[in-house]
Image (cartoon, rainbow, N blue to C red; front, side, top):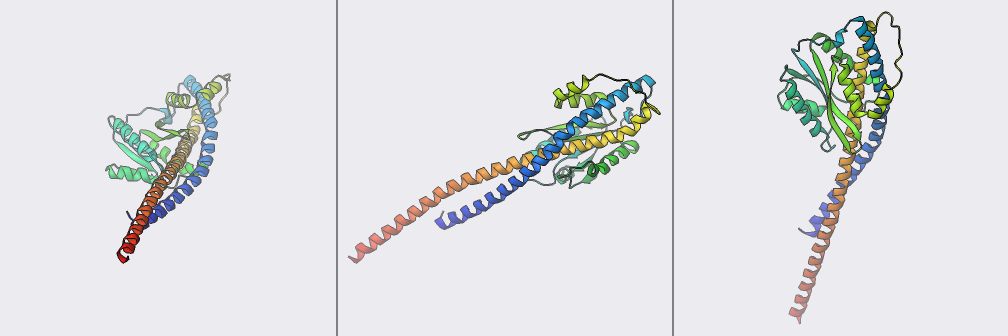
Length: 300
């Protein structure tokens, strides 16, 4: 390769390095905000579960089971799959979508499954697989307010009331900046055991602390069942909100790491290209000196 071509290639790689570095910085800022929101929402998730458990105990005493808690014959299942809208986030989308595909295949052993795609990558993936997409959403990557998620959650509650007997949400759980894990949680019908296992696994210390608090007796009016029925849509709204916050924190973390790796790789490539450039220049200078020497000898 000629020195001029190598020089042009060095310039191109430097430009790419600047872009990836800038994207990494933006993702780092977004990651910080998303992580704070996700982590701050966890104690509230535990408190919601604690309230739910107390209501559940009273409902069992009354011998009533609310609509959102009843197991019905399963004819159709909705799987809500949360991905990102954009790429450049390493294996983030690949991991969650492959995981979702496997989980959906398992669910299909019991009933047909339709997809609610949250994120453009999710919609594109399942469309390519030829699966029926009930509804798709985009633009949730930077959502941070509960009211921004509420219409989505309310829609899932309506779907459960009219069309689906089970609804699951599949998302990426934020563990650390360098580790994210795909997971699936049953949104509806509400099952205390499933929610308990999910919270205990992810927040063991906080879970034990909250569950060790003394259990107080309450008088519910009009009844624990009525309160249950009105509380569940709020619980589902929060579960969807919390899942999206976890997914957003995971996405921005994955993108920051991917862009850092890309920038580091670009720097290594530039070093190698500079060595090649110096070798090419040295060969060119040696060749030119040889030509000058030959020309001088010919004149002499």
